Image 1: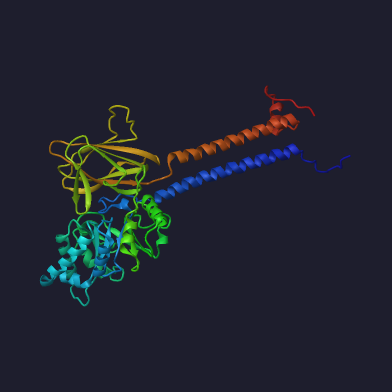
Image 2: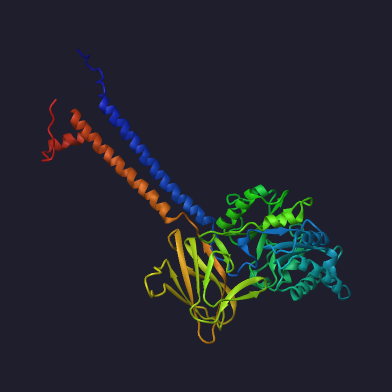
Length: 474
């Protein structure tokens, strides 16, 4: 006989049912947490993107991933390095200009010799866009005049070769950097670029130089928060020719981080120049969709059909057409896309479609934009924004009159997020989990019915006389 007040043992079926219920609710809770974290991660990716596409193009090929930084050498050593490397262009070469050369550029009797020396360096660069840093001459009382004379000489002599000027050791001598920056034609457009080290002398967007301590720091994760309001060129030292691992990390950095304009390597002196240069040329951002950020019109991911002609302003390549009908099309993963183009009094119009059915016949454009303006200027023209975070195809068709033209330098993709398919799978998983929880509860109730242990809900149904209720006998 059972003792009065003794706890009634829990039937095994009840214990199993409770365990199943707890497990299902744990899975359900984890699914909810995972869905929330997915949203947080997506928002984090948005924060890492540049909020506004810069209005000017980059004056070098970002899709080539690597450039060369020779600022640790003298001008003569840099010349010897380039001659030993072979006459093949790179995306960008950063060169030092010794103090005596800078001083000579501003003196009439010495300017000819200085320009001759520079001609040899430019020839050795084999058509690569250059960024030239000017060393400050010692014991000068008029740095502004010296800097102005040097920059003027470079601008007049090499407008289609030198993309940027800067001050060597700009962090140690901001006054000299300001003197160099004040002489550029773009100073009034971009404001005082004390925080930036590379200022365009013709056309293009200013960039900031970020110097790393080791090449291991080149990765999308380590560089995700670098200057999200503008472009940065990352300079990394290398103790050996660039290998597969660094190439993959640098390519991923360019593809995923719109603010990273290029990775330039600082080679150790003992390395063979030809081997290093060859290792840099092996990298290229390719694939079935454009990377996040800026892509030049010459990038492999941009398709062109029709009568497009090549034009160059400074070191920036453009594609220009004077006819109606030429098409530009791109595939990308993201939410926003802008067209880098020139607005002017003689500009035409563009029609644009996003995710259009190419077999659907003559579909009216989703967007039509007039590129006419009072004066000529580079702009980043938003075409589509707030799209789902998925893969899209944008088609842009030119519409010109007899006197108009359209020139394009590239496109800018921003706010790359998890694809909508990924978010859809997360939602599906959440729905399946909820359905599983409901099914488990239902099966538990059915099991209770069969075993003769009615749940409170079923007893309640029977009590109120529900015609679908069940009666139980013990």
